[in-house]
Length: 455
Image (cartoon, one colour):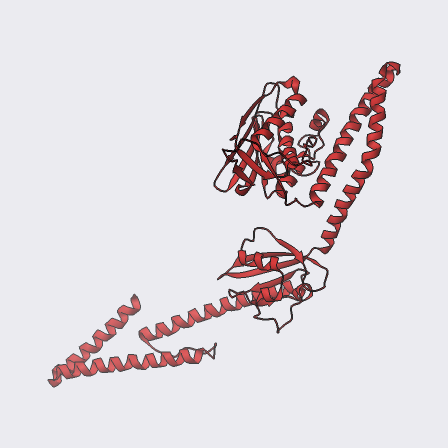
């Protein structure tokens, strides 16, 4: 503001001097016009210098601004200061980018930058090893033309990058690659690719080991359990001091049998795909069956069961697996709910999922335990296992079964007040049976209810 006032004062002073001279010469209008023309030509001259400086500055970044006075001098100096600030910021950002590129070049993971046109913009050295990219031949090439896997193209264009994509590496590399993409800038993408071949092999070895060991243990445990039960049936012929050890051995053999059975079931869930031909299960009948079985297991507790489900609700699933998942949740609720407690089973749709809920008013679970409840053998309290005879695998089985049905498990609990387990199934798996057809679809022959697994 001060600069403009000074410039206005100069203009007024010029007009005053010109007016005084014109008054003396008797040509006030002419002298005033000449003064304004001189002022106008001076500004045109300064604009020309300004334009020449900017044109020269585009190729000479360190050029000094023209010398001038008044407002134009301030304009030249102000723009020059802004240019120096911009150069410092550009230099700083360029230095950061260079460091990022140098550090990423040393990484074993592939880092690829993809522009808004879905073309390759930049990649590090690991990308050439994992993805077979060649510089500069592949620069500005479409990424989906270079990674020719339909699963990658679908993952890339859907733009749902909350989870990673695991596929075989391109060519004949025999590698298993994990792709993760993030959006940034003007719809540009940063793609990170990791080689998880060794992790994949270790996971396969783990599954094979668990499955094989479980199969090998099943037979000897069954034999031991059978002999122990025979001894228990003839306890009258046994010295009294051996009764308690034999009873404990029988209990532990039963527990070991349950663990082996659950491990075999987990192994089967991990290795076998869900069959295309699935069962049409009446959910209310399934609830009734699970309630009846649980009542028989916990007769002494006299729990109150409540069931809320439309009689016509049909779930498309593998019946024995859905039975096992819901039964696990109900049996767990019965174990940790005191005598006379209430266990509720309900089913209802929301906007995007179909919910199957098992709720109790038992002892509840502390909040910090909830994220780890579905881990294998995880214990909220080690004393609970010895008291209830659980294997610590029940919720892991529930999680795997739901994942096979494109569903997930959510857990809500308040310590000392109760717990709520919610199975969220896709809406397309739930439907209502034909009202005119009163017959309920029967499960297939191989869909008999499995034994309950418990945590």
